[in-house]
Image (cartoon, rainbow, N blue to C red; front, side, top):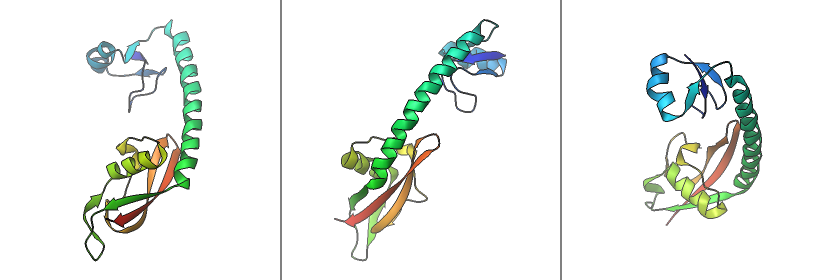
Length: 148
């Protein structure tokens, strides 16, 4: 069944795209939730309008993400955590800790799922993590873990 997506659906498509999906998925999820509408010959103009507005919004979001990246990469975040005498942390520094420190230092609020750590930091010292700000825009965050 061909449907016009009214919102972004992960793995299916983006707003304004006309895609072919299984009819059960369309009838049971996409159409009742309002995430899509049945495509017809008349919906092509509406799809084009949706794609145009999506592209304009994406350009503005990308520019904002680039500005945030410049601010984030200029900072070095300090996170205080309880540690033993040899520098091993009691617990670890997680993505949520990085998000809280970033919000405190810069005022930029990110979702913790946007932060990518290879593993949680378990020792005092410097480390770097990456953050996905927008599709294709990633920032490198310098984190300094200090003992309290």
